Image (tube, rainbow, N blue to C red; front, side):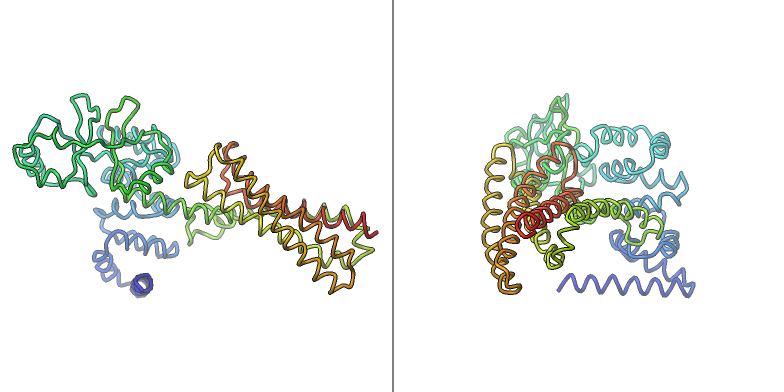
Length: 451
């Protein structure tokens, strides 16, 4: 019910703003934008076509640029940044959280990001360069450097007095990290412990061990740890165990959402950050590449059918039935492929259990092959009054089901070793295998037994 309400609310806001823009009521639009939180403004921008998007951005208060840019997808954010004056970009980026700043700089052309880094003050440049140095999709890349640390020898009263003088604490803070004079991580103290402990309590008596995340750890592993241990935040350390930042649950939610979008969009050969309202030429160029790949694989399957042209000419019924075996194999293979990719993403599949998993999927492929072979053989034998034709398609179905199970289980593992994204290319390769094997098994067996 809440999702429906939010969808209607956003749609109404977008309609109102578009109507006001059409009427030239820019002051009214500016007032509407001023009343919205940055996340809603970002959603409105992503839901608008390019011309309205430009007009809306120009009506946003400059002091909100940073907050809105943080909420935008990469494609939309980069499109807006290209329209901004360099000094405006630098001001907006300097106000960003470290993780958003690093992500934004990494998505810009090298020359642009270097110019922006050069225009920043020393502190902001250092935190950006530190995050960029760890590489994309690592803990160091997504961490925030806004940590409040304390020494083990001080009392609770001293630290709370420091916090009152400071005036605020970073968002999503549930733990303060204890470090020595070299910034080596000792442990953490929960916020709840600090506010309930006696004022003269020494910090070192409240310390608990904090599982530290290496800055080079892949972000997918970070998300798995947060999910497994129900963390709200975790410290990030370098190779010397020096505290360099922290990761909070909101960062992990973004990772999980991006991974889900990546898997879904990759199946269609699309970038998970692709702008829904991108220009026609730009969207066409991106999709054409994937369509070309699919055309190539379709031609491979057609080439296999062409090998049996004489057989098809003699028995027209084979052309009618030729799509059944590849289709069933494709569905079965994609079931296995999706299951294995998910297992790999969750950390369930490793070299220790890979052989067992492959054996299991082969057995499932064999059993499915037997079940559906018997069924399709019975249907064809009754439909076409031809027992031999039913036996041919049954044999081909069995072979293709086994091949589908084997390919679906092994392809993601092979592609991971080759540093290829299984979600992006696995489905296409699998479909090619099941089409080629299915067509060859069916028409080859028919040529051998029926012609």
